[in-house]
Length: 195
Image (cartoon, rainbow, N blue to C red):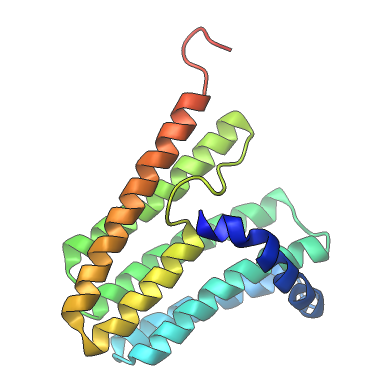
């Protein structure tokens, strides 16, 4: 929601960057983002909290860049969108697994992953049915979730209890956003016999 409202401003920042990076195809940045997420996992295993935080943010930034590069190069396509979505879900799982490696409570981590996947699924399913976007509907879209998870990781070194509390708050915020998003989507779709 917040990220979506800032998109006109972030687009102005990302477009010049994407134009410089457009010497390479968008999929290169998608793969680079996945690679950064795997490196984040390695850093979590080594309990390198700052490195893990920076790699997580880098992965999220590369996720934002790949779409911009595709648009600049006029390469946006259904295949590219599918690849991006699949990699995003894989990265969501990697981010959650990293939290387990850092010792965050399993129930909260599993809830984070479940809610994150459902949040994304509701949008994907709605957009396939309605042909309209749900972008900006609900709290804690992907960019916001990545920023929040980065804060959880960074706090885990110096204040594990505060990190756990923040993770619980993040879970609650995603749950609220999921219900909100589902309600908006459900109400806007026709029921039986409706058009």
